[in-house]
Image 1 (spheres, helix red, strand yellow):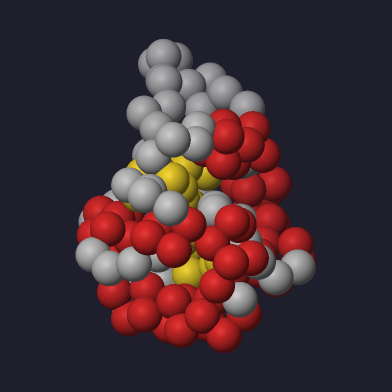
Image 2: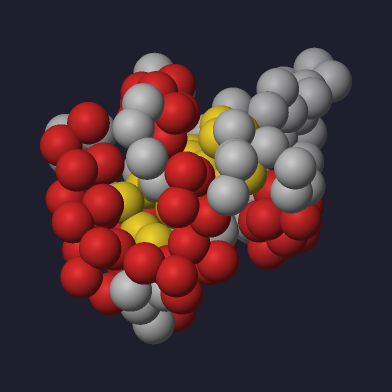
Length: 138
């Protein structure tokens, strides 16, 4: 998936730039602190339990008002990562926070399983997350 389509799916490109003030408390005089829940959008990330990199990379790229929510999937080999029920349960955890999109950030199993298996997996996960697009890194 190209960057333009990803940004379009998340719906954050124009909204983030046009609606976020640098200091939300300036109008009221009240000190305001973000609580970690995206006011503009939430992005759900599926990542193997051993890998903190995708989470930190998404936080580094997320504009103000977009929050990142991660579900860690137990991994006992690349094929097992996408096997039921672990990744299915992780998707259900992310659905509970109502993300705008869910991204699976684990390329190894995509390389191993191939494009056809990725398509079947994406369809399976989108059935677990009705109305929420699921994006696989490969």
